[in-house]
Amino acid sequence: MKLTDNVLRSFRVAKVFRENADKINCFDFSSNGETIISSSDDDSLVLYDCQEGKPKRTLYSKKYGVDLIRYTHAANTVVYSSNKIDDTIRYLSLHDNKYIRYFPGHSKRVTSLSMSPVDDSFISGSLDKTIRLWDLRSPNCQGLMHLQGKPVCSFDPEGLIFAAGINSEMVKLYDLRSFDKGPFATFKLQYDRTCEWTGLKFSNDGKLILLSTNGGALRILDAFKGAVMSADATVKTVHDSSRSLQPPVKIDFKMTKKNYCNASEH
Image 1 (cartoon, one colour):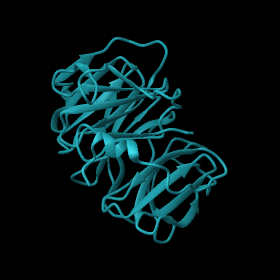
Image 2 (image 1 turned 180 degrees about the horizontal axis):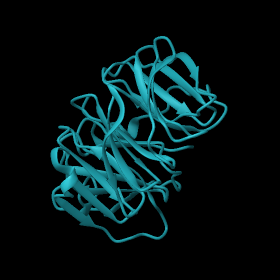
Image 3 (image 1 turned 45 degrees about the horizontal axis):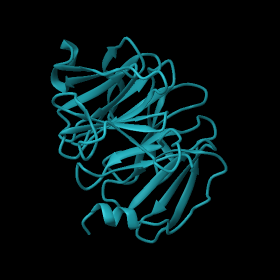
Image 4 (image 1 turned 90 degrees about the vertical axis):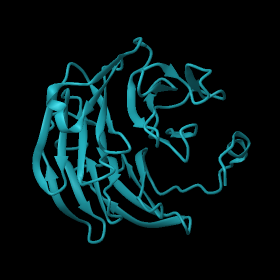
């Protein structure tokens, strides 16, 4: 099916799942597209079967809490940030509900978590104004960047570079092989006092960067020039025309660079 404007406008809610007692704070698709996993403020992780359209299993992280859940390249393991006790990132086996590894280091809440599309490395950003580079095979931080503000970050589709959105006003691009030398490109955006950036994502072809905010708006940037544009290159900022959006739980480009999806709390 080709995702045209008419097709997208024809979409309707088919099922509603009420598995959670509190807000869902994040969800992620497995790499094979067969399952979705969600994390919630009620400390649960719910696994859904996309083919059957029903929940498969519920796990809990009562001690540590769970946020920013991400599948690894294996469909039976995930990483997620903690929102209780400390700010350690945890690597969990869904098969036996056991932790494989902990990744300590951040001293404040983790705001971004992104798996590399090509290997077992991942990056995290935190309110402690740092971005850390990790490898699933080691609990030790593989790289550390101190920033001048709160970051959101993500790998590009080829896993060669990553972008850091800093203080909701600047996007910096880094070469993964030489990130310690500083960014190779910096885009300064007009600061909007009414909202803060909550997420960052590259399009599938790496040509666009999507920024979510807590102000009911999404911004799309040209990844090469830093110019603010929309999916159809005519509108600067994309709003929900029916009502103000809550801070997005998940943003992602799907199928083509012209289509993106956004999930909010309501």
